[in-house]
Length: 444
Image (cartoon, rainbow, N blue to C red; front, side):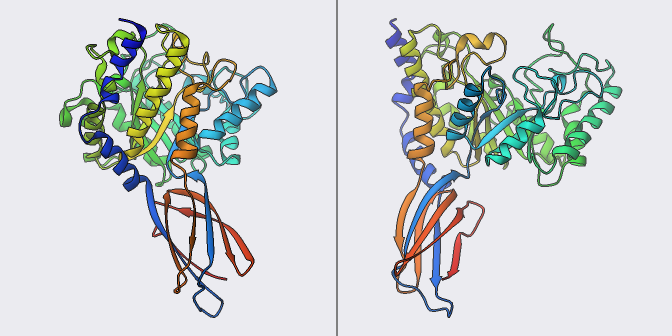
């Protein structure tokens, strides 16, 4: 099989989807990601203003498009760091920040919050990362409060003592970031790895029901508006799928039935592996089948909570010529993002490592960045830019009628508004929101 034949085999079900798939994506994108707004304009005496021209330009999405921010300030030169920030802000309004316990507290009580903390690769100081996000109007997410791995080696091998220290950690994070970081991966990867799976990553001794207990601790210390999410790996989220008896579904259902404030369900999407496994006759081809993906997402949506695609790695597969590998990465990115963006309960889509050769360990052999190792734009980055900033972008003009009313339709998000009447222009910022009535009455 030639490389071209292999690529065509991988994308077969995307190129020739089942009947109704493409129609669903188009319809649900308009239905769930766009809305109608109304302006009602009058003068100071309440008389309707007819013929006012309104110009709207979208500048930010309500939907969260993100990436991890692990390389913030971590490149060798100022020029590289500036370029990283520039290209991050161009396509993302959301960032996953590293709150890994092992690098946040390398020794007991020595916490790396402050901006002048000890430098650790791929782990910017959290004060710095949170400040940068808010200065650039990017919503930060804490990744994570607890995971069974990437924990300090000095933790006691005793579940009771461990939970005492974990409560102190959660209370400290809530006290410092409770008002500035309002979405957290509360528990990460409870299914994905057995304890002590790695010689280089510390393990922990957790109680049998630790997922429930960690959520209860988070609820105790974080404000009630904080979105407390559960996040797990690619295979457990999509592969052992048996509708209402799927493992992740059962865990989330159990937490909700026990009264846990589960604010979202995160599913990773790292497609590392052998190319032949993803071919049409391969054992992992289902990842490229839109029908299967919709089945999974629709089942999880029955939980009635937000869904998140939390960690995306679409490789530039080393088994293909580089140009064809980048072409495949760009093509499948477009297909996956369109599908995820259309799903009603989906609230965020988060790429993982933005730049090639900045991933964890041997993941670097897959070059799953949107930018090359020298921060140059890859075709996949340009596809995402086109989706976020052009295809899913609204610019429009409307006029008020004899009642001073103008209705308009656009993607949910923030807009620059310009109103012109009788050679007078008024400018302001407005929002079109899926959480709002979206009727704005103005006296000019």
